[in-house]
Length: 180
Length: 111
Image (cartoon, rainbow over all chains, first blue to last red; front, side):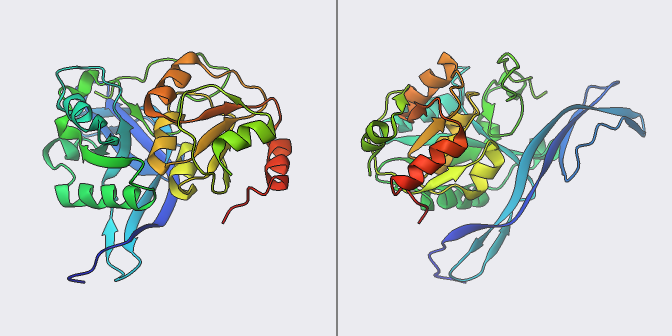
């Protein structure tokens, strides 16, 4: 609804798995959401896909509680917190710039490979930012959700995804696997 | 009740550096996805998870503190990351059930 100051709430929350697949031949990577913990290997055309990682996560939409407008986030693969691993990265530069304002940068990843060429629109990133800021006292701190395309090199980025993976208490802590 | 008052009354140990703030309810989960969907600003997040990814999750939903139960050892990496973001990581030897009972007795209830 035009003129509505949207108040966004999570809806259609579905818990499941983000599946990371890699082709054994061309090393292409793709991700998708699944309600099941799957470890299938299969051929599709020239590719032989195998699962490299299965992480528990959630899918959700955001809905305005005032006007009912619904925004789907089915293309959202995950949110990543910057660990400042590459000083020449735009995300790190932005985090440095906004640190004094107590604004924390979170990077929104779309599902691969689609997100490489069709990033999550800025308008949707703004809605995500609004949602998380509406859940907090912004006088204390704020969140800004930015696009994964700001990352200098995703293949070596070691940011932490907010995913349920690698958290078994008896496992030694290891660095996240590279995404690509 | 503030985080400082809670530490004293519940016998918690502060592991990270943070600014005191008001506590507003409790959220219990060991799943980051669960916290992202359901935790509210100001909640105490009670968990046995100690991986550093609890810090961005806590930051995202603006919990007032993360309480690690059952005496689980928190890696220094997690503590350092939490201090950097001003997230309170607190520790107790109590198992979650007993801690929550204590929190309930102190009047820290979900609003």
